[in-house]
Length: 98
Image 1 (cartoon, rainbow, N blue to C red):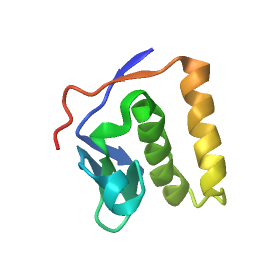
Image 2: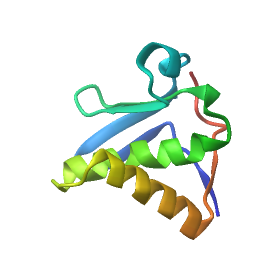
Image 3: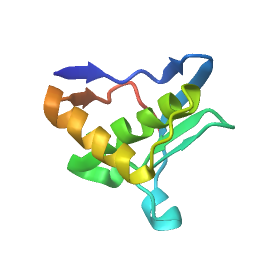
């Protein structure tokens, strides 16, 4: 399933901007980041084939925050990987800038 990634998303009352941020892996040892305070979801463009799973992982964080779920970082990762596999998701990144 191909899904176009919008530059802006809303989850309940929260609004987020999605952008590429080079060197996240080098600077922070992260491939992606979601920040509730700033409303920014950042993805390191050097993630390669794992970029879809990284984005899904970061998209799950606003859901966890908005709906006050108690779920570990590891379980968010497992859920992201499972959703990607179950629905055979491939993201279209053409609207994302960095």
